[in-house]
Length: 366
Image (cartoon, rainbow, N blue to C red; front, side, top):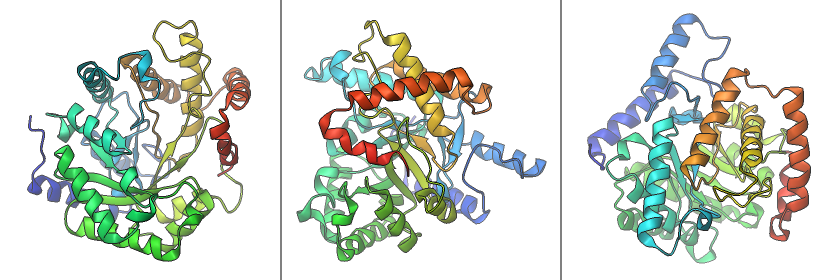
């Protein structure tokens, strides 16, 4: 199996995605009740053709891109990885990342979001020989719009081209520029420069789809409404205790403009957990359940394509697959007992939140 996708493959896959967009398929759960039997069958066939399809996984359409991605995806960060391997040991670290990615593909998790240069390099290495099995999201946050010196379109293109080259990538499925966490700090001109770069990268065949990441939901909503054709995929926080605003929500715009949305910080920087992530800590069982409940709560919002937790072990990958299985078995709903458990866990999550993550409290209503 080749680890590189040819220009012909790129154009073919992009054409398939464009056809899906033209067909007017709506974002949301795998099958919508309003569909006819023929439409359901057609959609099911589209899903079966997605990368690393697994019948036990749920797939959601990534907005207007037409890509079908797993209901849980792999986030780029590897916090607490020192609990399962020695990060300073390059061989051991690479082995861990390869094992985690391999297990993701086995269970049907088919999208990786790499947020910085180190993550792009690590995950590109991990998918060697399997590039056609996974969709890859690209960002090089250290040389993108979050940094003042990288806010011009030509500098952003330089960052993209250098990042792709050093990782040995021919293209990225999604380039989502990392904007400042406080998006309102950007001027209109700076946003226009980012959009200009996204447009050029897509035209040049370096990326298939485009978007951005920020922590400011109100600002993000305004940018999507202004640039609906360029912001096809966005990233913003959505935790185990986040909810959709009843009016004027970001999700109104997400649905209207058919934008794919990946939820970051689902576990509030691990504040949801009692243990430290090590495989033999005494809180593994309870923390696994908390993680599954959090994912199921997040997926109850059909406008979210997928949460993207950073996973550091095969065990954690399997637990995410189990969360999706439980969701499907229980028709997407938490029962009264599960809601009570999650509520108690969330109270501890907020109490344990590190000072530098206090801003996450502002993400309760999106």
